[in-house]
Length: 88
Image (cartoon, rainbow, N blue to C red; front, side, top):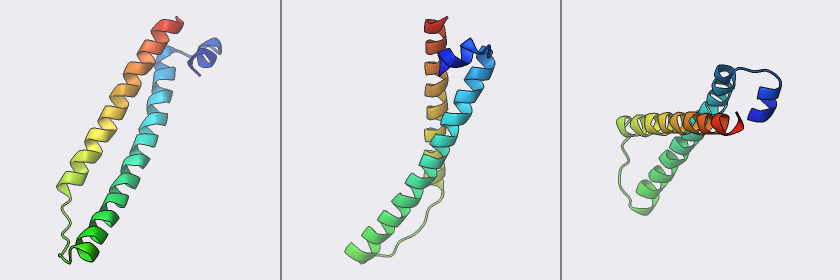
């Protein structure tokens, strides 16, 4: 993909921005889906299997969401820079 965009005359800033938006959106959606699935699983586990009440705590999921999103963007940015240096 990077080679194709470079051959079409795209700048490094455009290529980096494109990949960051794409993989940022994927990380965002995957984080939301993962949080929803973990809520459902923890509710079912606590209520059905352990017969205990289930309480929602919003701080931990928000922190995990932020860490996942930021780490995905950092890794994407690092890999794009490495790929751009190799293809130059």
